[in-house]
Amino acid sequence: MRSGGSEEAGLAQPAVERYLERLRSKVWPRAADVGAADLMDELRDHLLCRIEEQVAEGAEPTLAADRAVAEFGPLDGMAGALHAELVRPHLRRLTLVLLALGVTAGTIWTGVIIAGPAEPWTERTEPLPVVILDAGGALAGTLTLTAAVLGVLLTGCAGRLWAYPRVRASLQRWSLRVSWATLALGLVTAAQLAGYLLVRAVVEPTSLAWPAVITSAALTLAAAPVLFGPLRRVTARKSR
Amino acid sequence: MRAEALKGHLDGLLLAALELGPAHGFAVMTELRCRTGGVVDLESGTLYPALRRLEGAGLIVGTWTTGPGRRRREYELTDRGRRSLDEERGLWADFVAVMGAALGPRAAMPVPGVLA
Figure 1 (cartoon, rainbow over the protein chains, first blue to last red):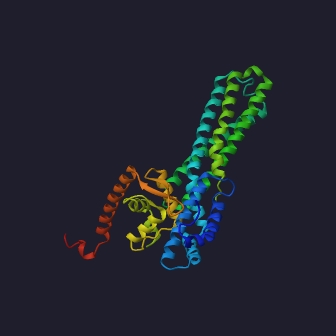
Figure 2: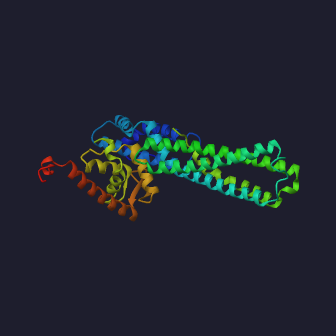
């Protein structure tokens, strides 16, 4: 139901629709969202109410529409404020999922390596690529968890600073960047872990507890789709 | 009124505007404008994100109704929202009392040295 309530407001509908379409394309540039239609209906009702109010006071409908749109506020400001509010729950979920996956995967793989058979080399005979993979993996893993914690903190702070929309939007943008960094670091850690396991498997296949390795690998891969939901929702909307 | 003065009180204002019964966004804005003689005139970019936030926090609940030939979203206070409004009123009364004592007429304040 998108027709105007009164005939006069109906005449002003094109100006309202143009504004709402521009707003929609700024907030949801790529993907259709169920929430988009609902929010646009709510804002349309607001604009038409304001037009009807002015028309009742004797204003000309198209002028009333222009004034209603102008009073609604700058498009960028409105889009930014809506974006920050709409994306926040998905961003919060994304940062929590990243942290939970990071901690879980880190615990499982550390357990698999520590509790499994001994390494097929000593500190002296450890091949250089393994030394690099070891050190790199430890560093990337630590950075992944640090970034994951930072993402949760940034989103949490943004949630509390609702009275300061600019600061809040800025914190949320940083939280999204940190989430991407967490994801990238997580993939680097996973690649280094895979390289380390591959070298061990080639040098001495019996130095790995294969059932534990295969189960952990399956669990890690199975957990990946958990990320896709919040990630898709967060990236479906454009940051200002 | 300076926008900064409203910071921290927006929730209370919106909850108070919904206290008398369900209302849609435009009605909430109009109610606040009327109650304050036009001094509090919220921008839409402030109003709708705030309504979404209050709904997410469980302080208000929104339902779709049919307005004059179009969909309309109306908001209503929840029990939690009423309790939050009561708390907000209490905090505001304390704030007014403290600021009134601090910023009140000079004559009403004790002058250092006179009472000593």
